[in-house]
Length: 398
Image 1 (cartoon, rainbow, N blue to C red):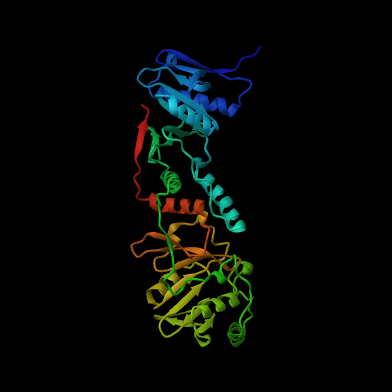
Image 2 (cartoon, rainbow, N blue to C red; image 1 turned 180 degrees about the vertical axis):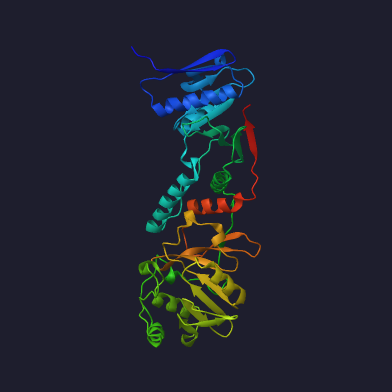
């Protein structure tokens, strides 16, 4: 019979980790990595045992690695351990509980990939709720990429406070990922990590008719008159390569009319003097007491910045779908004094992002909007706070 095993040495002792025929290679490697970090933290090979059965609350459970040590007994689980098992262990085991895995939140790329998936699901079904990050209190969750010992992780307390873990030789803290976890977990505990404002008592709030779930292109005669005056078609999307995703002119004219702009106060793609320069807005609405400038892209930051500084009115940006990849957006793209309303196939979905004058991102929604893609927003907000965020960190190792 052929036996496969690995041997680790520390303090003149040897620890043997056998490879069982009924376990995956990934699971075995995770046990090796877990054993390595425990030895680095001062445990002796003679204090550790692989695949030991322990009775917990009258039930026999097998620990991937069990550490017999009076001052700090330890229980290690690897690779997709069921939450029910970890919860049971946490109820009755008085020592350190470690869960080691190559979690999907191991890298920013994986976060973005899942955010994209969740975001597309939101777009298709208008459903923005996602499963919150589930962390069992007092269980250390260490991330391992199967190439080296775990060097960072997170643990939650009973009251939902997160403490981030790192090995002493960690070269770079994954602040953006930690911030993402913190935001997701805070929402799971209803702690409102960032404000979501419901815009009600404001002039430029789309009514339910203009939201994706209710919109029907039933244009009024007044809308058709405005378009005819400007020699435009209601379904036209001028100078937009992905026209099917950009707001259609008829939709926007109807929207501006609903906000009380007179027909003669609505212009489409006409040169407009702002400050000392001329610009062509996607659409402009003017009346005696207010005005609104509508753009369909937030890529031209220089143009937006100049308009913001010289235009006396509201600036609303309605990016097309190819630009609203919020999971990959940089927070720097959201300029203070400009409102970015999300659209899908050119129709408002009822939420958006803006930036306050003190440079904080704000999320807003209409009273009739039910869904927000929280997962993608957590990633975006995590990047926003990561630059000056100092989370509680506990270090391990020698």
